[in-house]
Length: 117
Length: 113
Image 1 (cartoon, rainbow over the protein chains, first blue to last red):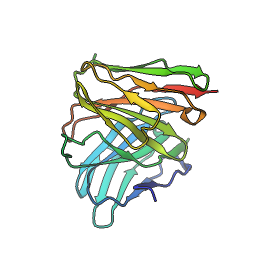
Image 2: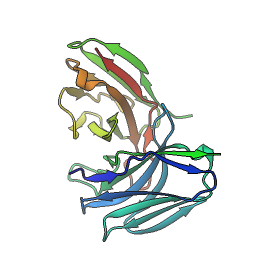
Image 3: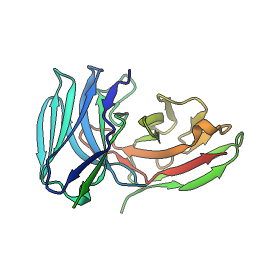
């Protein structure tokens, strides 16, 4: 079983829809939770970052973390065709003995999202 | 502007050859990482470095090596390329402090025939 599970989709929605993307994880040491967006043939770029449990909102994007359920979500409101991309969840634990483990990320498989006009 | 660059962006090589993928960042970041991305697996960590002369194995390090002789560069070497190493490779760097962005390069597409 993978440490981080993410439904690869693909997910296709009409413009303006609310999109819900989810990941589950098994490692209780994960403390930092991120969502990355990756356009075709490009590198991932950080979209949202959350520490521990709770919600974080940034414009049309909301990230939720439920550590008790080991479940994280990304919501996209009023989705746009420009949101069409692969969305990857990523997680990291606290500093390890050799320094900070931040950046040593464990990724989900990624969900391919298409928003059609 | 500071950036992270990978080269080559595309490469085709033969089985058994040694291949080196370059990664150069101008942010003066201590942490550098190499990931590979394959369908159904997402991004998996190959090797990482927390500073000059420091290297560590990641989840899928077999057949790969790295060296860190300066802050800016972390080249990834495939000692004897295998078809299973056909993949997209991403280099990344970060300051190393939680909350700071991890920057990814544009990727290197490697095909081993």
